[in-house]
Amino acid sequence: GAVVSQHPSWVICKSGTSVKIECRSLDFQATTMFWYRQFPKQSLMLMATSNEGSKATYEQGVEKDKFLINHASLTLSTLTVTSAHPEDSSFYICSARTSRSYEQYFGPGTRLTVT
Amino acid sequence: AQKITQTQPGMFVQEKEAVTLDCTYDTSDQSYGLFWYKQPSSGEMIFLIYQGSYDEQNATEGRYSLNFQKARKSANLVISASQLGDSAMYFCAMRSLTGGGNKLTFGTGTQLKVEL
Image 1 (cartoon, chains in turn red, orange):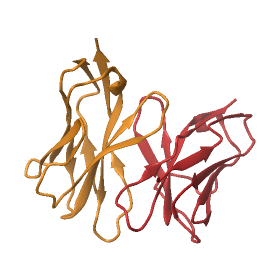
Image 2 (cartoon, chains in turn yellow, cyan):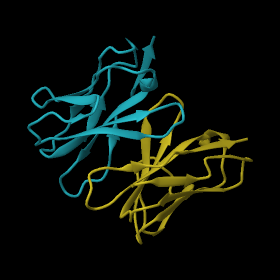
Image 3 (cartoon, helix red, strand yellow):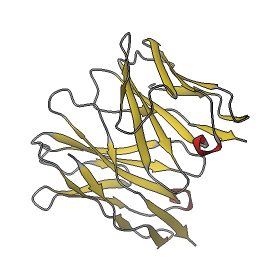
Image 4 (cartoon, chains in turn orange, yellow):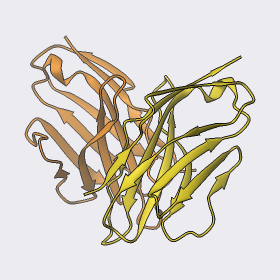
């Protein structure tokens, strides 16, 4: 149990376009979902926390208008990178947790390359 | 603010040997949780082990054990009988358990390589 999926697993897009990444909890209801960004050989940096039905809480330094997060249901959160630039190229990982568990369940990640 | 420090950017261990990955933390919270995750080259984050700040016993999960020394604020991961498949990046993380805290704070990671 406790499986989180991400789609797509990798995406290449042109500079200036937008790309949407989906994060789904497959067998549990996620009250909270998290979006992380990871550069090569670096740690995970939390971008934002989203609770179902409410606006996401962004970490300091993360542009809300550039990284749009929507947590539309208890099983789905989306991250949209708007007007992508090459510096947005990174590995994006989501995680999810329920209110009853201390554990966060991570998705497999999405590798974004902006050309 | 919470901080996790992993001072070993890379470690080598021989197959079947035990290895300890260091993790120290800093927090003003009284109630918190400590986690270890494994990240192979595929990128997925694999949960290994959890220790609560009020747990008196050190956590163990199969070949993984957490050497929790609260007074020293350390939570080292011990992997016994290393296997080639243990080669990966390992992250220590913590989360406050007070006030419904959600955020996981990660360390910088340790790259472990298991050799024959």
